[in-house]
Image 1 (tube, rainbow, N blue to C red):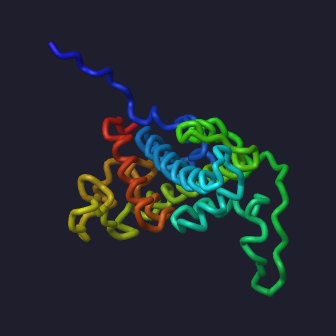
Image 2 (cartoon, rainbow, N blue to C red; image 1 turned 90 degrees about the horizontal axis):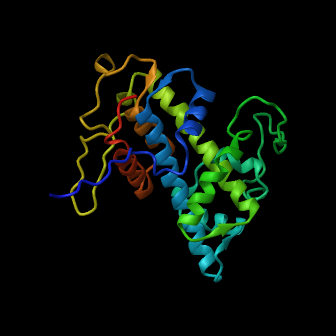
Image 3 (cartoon, one colour; image 1 turned 60 degrees about the vertical axis):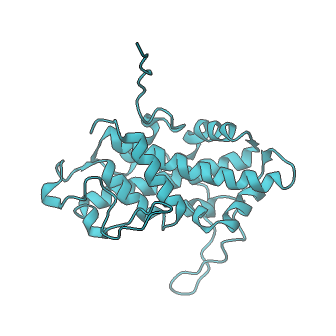
Length: 253
């Protein structure tokens, strides 16, 4: 008699707790968010942050270090343009000042650097600290640590990225589903691409045949938003694939 492995819920492996991810969605939309959507968003964010940390870890390894510093983050982004995500954080971090250049408004006047807000209103920047535990867990999983400034930058990038993902997910629902943005091919290495294939499995539904009413965010809406946040390449494909795996046994919520 064979022993069946214990069943675990998909999404539990993400270092970003579902409650925190759902809180981000609540910050930007009043729509209902399914459990599978929350798990998909957590998975995508984990994939993106893990890739950034991996790039920084490789940069640090060249100097025989296991403690990451902000310079390693810059190095990782310079080497792989796909890692340039959460750019809304850059203007708030000393790490990126001087790299983003001087900004001008429509009248040609220099736009001053944003000041740290004391507002209690929830935002990606104000709420960045909530992801510290998840960031540290990801760092440990890759066998490295990071100085506080680096942890803060990773917190901020995660917060801004996830906030953008939540906003785009809501936009996908409001605009009538993934067909609003066209189809996206998921190419598997070694196999021919299928231009007619889309993010959804089964194929995307028209707005009139959506499983949920138009005011609910589901997993497929998050996958569509991922293609907006990640412009293409191996990182986007990996994020989509891992999000599918993380939610394949999840209920619709």
